[in-house]
Image 1 (tube, rainbow, N blue to C red):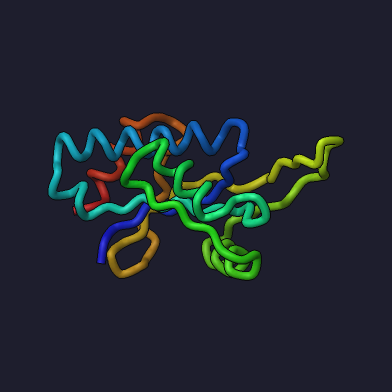
Image 2 (image 1 turned 45 degrees about the horizontal axis):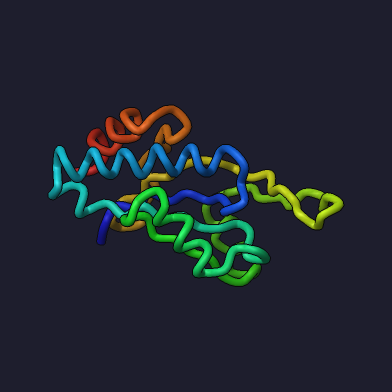
Length: 141
């Protein structure tokens, strides 16, 4: 029954995920200050595409580092595969390096979903918090 910002990424992401989540978190903070009633109707959700490394605790801490309002989710590989398919998210694990680490090439859209679970807009999380805030105010009521 709430608007949701759906963002897919992983906690070891070196660049895109932290930047986008910072913009989403700051947009939510600004929305809380300018329109608390609307902010209460929006739930930002971060879903890990790396269930091999991203435990529920790690995902929760990672999401909370950007905003206490961001819900961090992970699951089994099958669950992640199902939800990424549903949202048309690409997530491909790269080759392991000498230390066993790897990157994941993934889509980085922030979807705004309506309270009845219909897609409404792509939020410009890659631009700025103000751009995200502007689109939230435009679409969510």
